[in-house]
Length: 130
Image (spheres, one colour):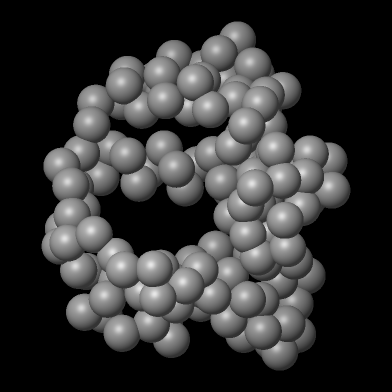
């Protein structure tokens, strides 16, 4: 559900095998806002809208769309961000091959404190075997 806003993006752009241009990336970056508006308009899902809006925010404030930082980002969005990144790394994509689960986990750990909430990553290290 976090990527529901991608429904408004041309599938050719979503599946483009080459690097995105700056203008194409700007189109992709609008999907959290589109998803927010879709979910906000449906009573049954409106409570999820802010989580979707914030799932590309980064712990260090360098994410989008609002540049939220640290605990300004809803907890659910911080968890979605980590799960989404992990899934994206281990899945085959038109523009790159998948990486191993171990390498994906190492990348999450490397980005703890910048892209990802370091406390959630720490919990993953302590509690999960991937």
